[in-house]
Length: 371
Image (cartoon, rainbow, N blue to C red; front, side, top):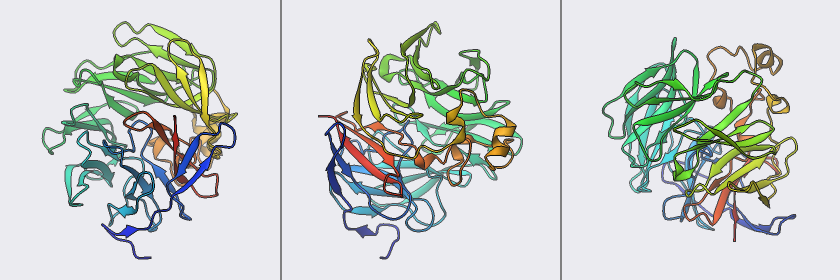
């Protein structure tokens, strides 16, 4: 089978019922390689819900593809140099995709498949892209020589700024109601911070030690508040203005994605993996959507603290210094490989969820109907 930018391939769709809950599940990919959706902080569905963007290693290196939903053909979107496999984010217009390749942020037009570099940082390691609600600004974590922090600029390629930080930065995200603010995580503790887009106002949102394993923070829909996991104990909410914390539920919620209204949180689970759940923010009540049946690898998830240097050495992933932990995608490490994690997220109409699972021996893309 011949691959290349714009190449079309037959659907790989398979339909089945989850063996525990009975919900309808669509398997969108069926190739003996790694195939996974975008990172859970970014939706993999196009705005109209007719296609799912995913990363595939079927050409030998990670490239972007899209599959028509529910059972349309598969089209290759990028070729050439490998992309950062979890970096892609769709613009609100549904037409443009931003992603990382080497030390550069690129923009792809889905119709024409034309690409344009919108930000270049020679010799840098960049994390996943994140857009503000308007699609005018983009940010990403950076490690460039001795510089750590985040970069932020306009999606038209102008106005770039580096905001330095003394430790590794991961997962920067714009506030959904005020794009002047960016929340980001630091590794290791304390985890949650915020800074203004112009680099001012830097502050830690919650002081805690290495033994309080805060992970996967994100905004609670359009409430403007934050929601995060204290692994593996509880799901928490934090008021953006007062920093007051409220426990939503006590259980091993893992990767989390709220709905737009901030009334539900979608999550996977691990140790044990009991499946993918929807959690009511007001009550903490939860219902199982389906099983993930993924291998959920990463030695640190058996613990309730951040990784230390000896943990990295034990996992044979090399020295911890300079690592961006979510980029450990290709080998067994303390936090991954990431493609063995479900990373569930909502469709635009919030009637479906997309997730990854290596239940067949290779990671594939799945969509479950919520009914």
